[in-house]
Image: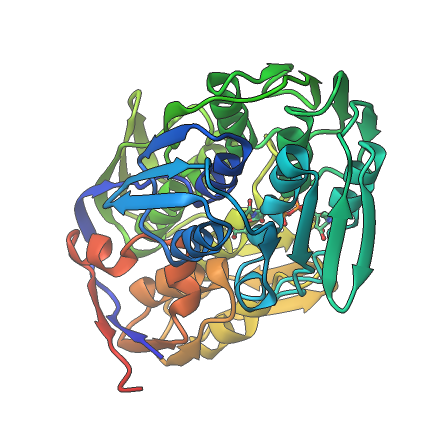
Length: 419
Ligand code: EPZ
């Protein structure tokens, strides 16, 4: 397994270009199943999860071509309506093929995604919603078997706000008969980006960006061209890096209108920022101020930024408290950060951090995607060498992070594993 070798203590300086959003690209790729036409996608990030999704979609018969950040999908020859366990077990977002396959072909066999490091992550709301739309669903041998003659629109209220649950049901509703109302819908910008693509494909959706989506089903959808939105989590991750390590960077090709909660906290941390339409110039010349926050659904503080801000808090000049309300086990990075000399204690879904003057490099292990990013941030701020193992977690969601950081002065290199 590849490792990252980081010599901490170097300030960052220069420009970083942000890639397309992983959590928009994954549902958008699945939308290719909804039409016999062609989707021409740009700004698709070069990530392991995207590679896995393209492999999964290719196995259904969807024609896939990828050229750097451009992907085309043509759905005229789909003949295998399933997502097998060997791929689903490596990427939970595979569940997003269920709604489109069911809506267009009336049938789907999708492996139940297992849990993952950050929580059990059930898909009961996806299933409940599809059943409400008329699907007959049974679960046997670790697989979801779904069938229907034709989905019929209805009003669905999910028990909690679920991002991929909203996306699955939204895609299914576009080809259902009649009107579907999704109450309690997720409002994440990635859901909005998917909705914009679906409208470009001929779907009829109202309430985009709100927690109430109203969809009039249509007989079929056609191809479209779409640029995936910029990754707000990648952007905020690099801003946390400069907040912890110090320096002067400009992040480019970013959206600045979907980052409010993170930018508010970064100002509180003491990051000086000048914000343009698609760039942010950020400077940090002092020790961070600690920030207390609790994660919640968009537009609140994103759970996908919790670990990265905790890394900043570990070197802040005071105490802070972090409460994780979305996932039940998203503190896997805490023990690893304490190996670097951080002072963090957890009690249930709350972590108490006492900032220290200086972290000290040590060997640590990545456990999940955002935890990996937080360890990179802590290592950049630490004195001495840190080795981060199992960085395949990082590669799932960050497009060449070490290349982008090296280009702004970080002493970071990838050590390829022999096996
Ligand atoms: C999406 O996961 C993102 N992944 C996650 O990003 C993100 O952390 C999460 O939304 C929350 O914003 C993608 O978009 C591919 P949820 P998702 O359904 O959709 C519970 C990253 O780091 N729930 O919104 O799986 C669930 O257990 C990843 O990029 C049910 O109980 O999250 C959780 O507690 C990590 N039953 C809460 O709802 C369901 O049927 C929110 O989960 C569905 C969800």
